[in-house]
Every structure is written in structure tokens, then in C-alpha cells.
Length: 87
Image 1 (cartoon, rainbow, N blue to C red):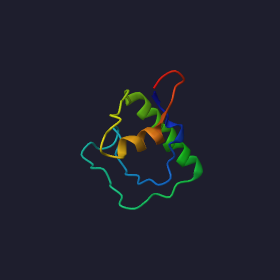
Image 2 (image 1 turned 60 degrees about the vertical axis):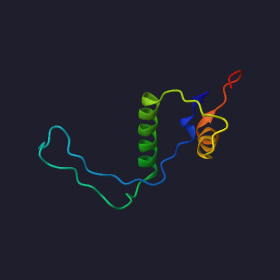
Image 3 (image 1 turned 90 degrees about the vertical axis):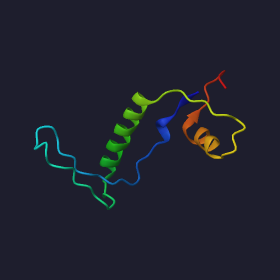
Image 4 (image 1 turned 180 degrees about the vertical axis):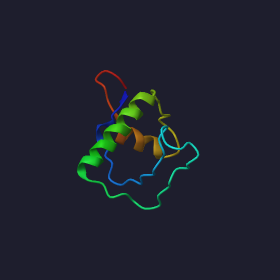
């Protein structure tokens, strides 16, 4: 069973300004507290970047079928897809 990030969509985002390495290293990030208005192109960009990074950092996970919490099943239902022949 692999993680399916194909359903991930960025709908809302808060973007913070983080100074790059070439800027003054003593300058702290500028944190935003409001939602950033994004164009469709920007939504696709952030969706792609988040998906790429999650795919690189992800590892296989298995859930306990008789877990008391509904969260594991919600994760499986929404982010995992079945591979034929694999449970």
C-alpha cells in the first residue's frame, strides 16, 4: 500500500517571508497571521512542492485495524490506495 498524494490540494495557505541565505542572516522571518490569496497557478505550485517533499520524506506505515480511534481509518481512506494483490 503506497501513499497517494494525488488527492492533495492546497486550498488555503498562510505564507511567511523567510530571508534567504544571501540576505542578512540576523533578519528574523516575517510571520503572517492572515491567509494568503493565491492564484490557481500558485495553488498548483504549492501543491506540487508539498507533494514532492512529502514523497521524499515519506515512509511506509501500517495501521492497527482494531484501533479505538477513527483517525487511522480516515487516513487510510483518504491517503492510501490499494495496490492489486497487496493488503
